[in-house]
Length: 620
Image (cartoon, rainbow, N blue to C red; front, top):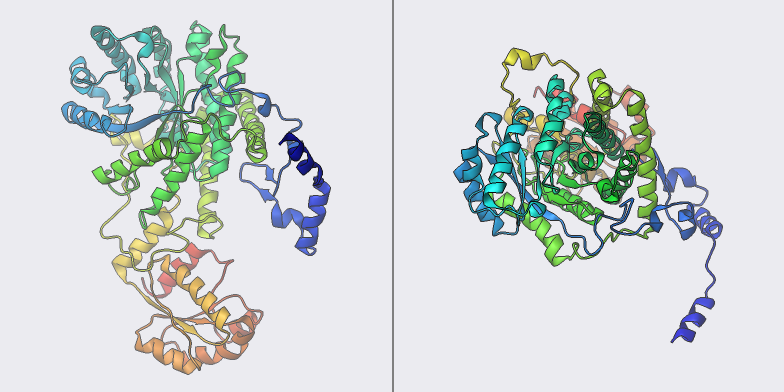
């Protein structure tokens, strides 16, 4: 058998990279290789169309082993299991406890409780955790940072009363005052002094972390992957430095920090992000000279994004969150929350929460993603992405450090400005369909109505009065979902008047069908009723049919060459009885404009602005 294998390999000569490039250039027939096949990412680096072993020659990541410093290949050696987490809002502790016990029997092994600060008490904790075994189930708590220390003291007393093995209690308290600066503009600097005390209270619980980095807030505000990664590292380093400066042992300080990161739809890039994050965080902690390399492990809870979720065609959110969950699980996270598909417009239903749980269970139990350690390792592409992301994120980290650290940069507003600029750019790209949102700005459901669904408004949640909330001390990050602009337009159309757009298809069969499909998708983004047709023999026949259908818009769909023949006669015959639109950007466009035709839809249009303009013309 070995001789046959040796013979098999010797019969084929491996082509060189240059031979591949030569062949590709022939197939491109003179087209620019860089423009056609090289992907310039939003993260600031280029991705080649193929990679070979030689591309990894100077990379160190393939030499790493699972469970060993710098942990690029994961924190564990034996498997890739993660905690399946679901978060619960605690309004009534007894109801929250009942819900927790119920979902623990449905595949959940990690609970996240969100408790209002003024409700924190020993009685609440007793009721909330009744019959929940905290040495088996991971328990996580979020409350007002000002009440985090009180909560920690109550939890420690509770754990001791139950006699839990301190090594087996796994979980966290989400103490992250800096997030309030970024997202709310609040000056919570005095609260930071609580951090060393918090760590001291929980020091005997090595797997219960109390200082959090909530970079998922950046993800949900539209941050690019490299931005979230770079800022998360600087954020974590800020807390680590403050703890060490306050006299906390570096090993204890590092083991007290937990990262809550988001996951966007960029499948391979997100997978590589978690690998790069562990690599860089381990290097950062190493510089503090901990006694044990285990202090360099990065613990990450991943939450699928809300930034790309939509109100219309909301079941598509399941597709988005499923690929995001795949990225996180294959990337080797500690725990994961899958955001229910309906969270953008309602309190998640029992059905949506069940589906969200099952999305993880499908990956874990059916697809066996929890059994293979770092399945992305050795992939030339993923190794390249890991290295490239690490390099670009490190630049952001160094830039923040040059500004005096993450806290100083947050107070100066440079981080907020950077994320807000990205959010604006991404909304602009979505408006032009450079960034697709399936079901919203591309291939919308033509017949769907909102049925009263409205995007949920973010409540402030603070205890200060409205005047204080309106005047933040620092700049804030504006978190606006990518689909929001299109949703607002579509709902406005639905509530005011739904125009009828009629496709006047004529001439070249292939071109008229393609242009009709494009125009239907274009106009349905605003909720217009679209009527497609098989074709007309004359423009007069098409216009008559459109007017019979009470069309508000008539879209001429044909080939570029035929527009010179059909467009002006159709426009004149319509005679202002409906808006006239030409599908495409033909060479004769100037002649058509000279004849009075002013509306064109094509791939270079700003879809959102064009549809707003049409609404205005139609009196909507």
